[in-house]
Length: 581
Image 1 (spheres, rainbow, N blue to C red):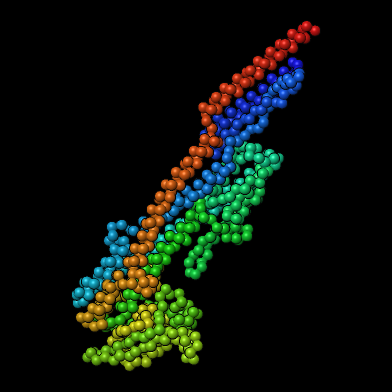
Image 2 (cartoon, rainbow, N blue to C red; image 1 turned 180 degrees about the vertical axis):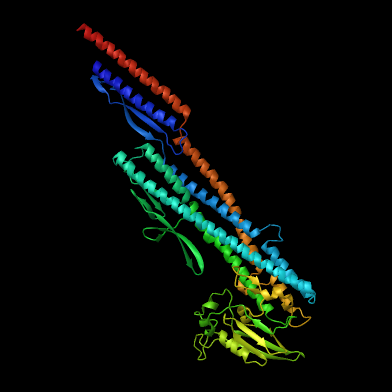
């Protein structure tokens, strides 16, 4: 050992302290930078040199590594937590909007339940006083108000679904942008590090990539696989969406299945459906196909059952304004007019949410003197041919029903150019119906109260609104059995609703969404606490403490000053030695 070796020791100390000061300064400069992970210089004593028997003298200090203080497992947990919390916030938002739409004013009067009650109450009131003209107008107006509200609620729900679709498209586009940036950073990290890998490497590039991965985690749950050479692969479920330096973009698709507009996310290159259960995208998909779509189905089920059940009753009876010319509401396509009502190929009837069944109804023709004749019209929809084999070849069609009615005396039946059944009577006669066990009259819209098939097009018959005396109250003047039967639908258990009443269906739907919202609120609070705890753990490990870095700054400054003084002393000694020579 000599003075030259001492100079090398001082030089190593100067170099190590300079590098440590740079790292400390970089930490302080990025103390407020989101996603930055502080770095630490790990110094190590250089292996000593033997100076004598069992004597070793150190050769200075070296830099073992510049280490990013990061815990990959903690990062993965934090990404999962952020994804779950983002999903819960979407749940809150969507369910709150559904609650607002379905509760309307929330006063129990002008919401759907209140309007149902008021309509049924109006039928009950007219049953008590069938001759009251104002009561007829009240019934019709309450029915129209209920129909308007049903269509309005459905329109708002469709608007919410469209909003969710728009958010899904935007979020998928954001995800694709993030995937491209992550793949580009993979390439930049390989180039800058030479494929050496490890957890440290180019800290700034890796921090940028970690930030992008966190942003992607807000949109969807992901799995990050470190390949060991500086590259990470990213998977959504089991589907790779980033492989090395290549991004595999996603696509958002809307398609109609079984009459409903479905949404899903695909791998754009392979059209493989990707299952996403968390993050904003996962929550939007789940809420779209869950609460939003199920509430739309509920409002349609309620409306279609209301239309069918009320019309089945209203079709039967004799209104004050006698029926001499009736046109059914259902328009049947020409090819379907000669197909059985239960034929799967009959698209007009197959698309209806309610069906006619095997049965019959009676038609009563009455003259001015009150004399009447009754004709029974059979509706054959048993699905069995005349030979006893399964089939619809011999079942009732619109044309056969029209022919059967037209065969009775003093009445004529035709199919209009629009495909509607039209029934007219001879002068001095009127027609009424009774005992319909098939539901055919309601399906065809004969003497109906409501028009339409569900909440998309429900309304009150136009000529009924123009002339309230056409309202059916009972089987004849002074009778009220029809009005009482319709009033009883308020609590009646309906086969069209699987044994539920109209009130049961809607209160169940509203209650289900309310419970889901409460659960979403509690879950969001819980997940927020978990996320904050994980962020605190990451901050304790990876965050920059200005106090700690300030102490490091003083330490490395003193190390540099000491090394400089040491070199100065060794230089003086060298000069003395040279002077002696």
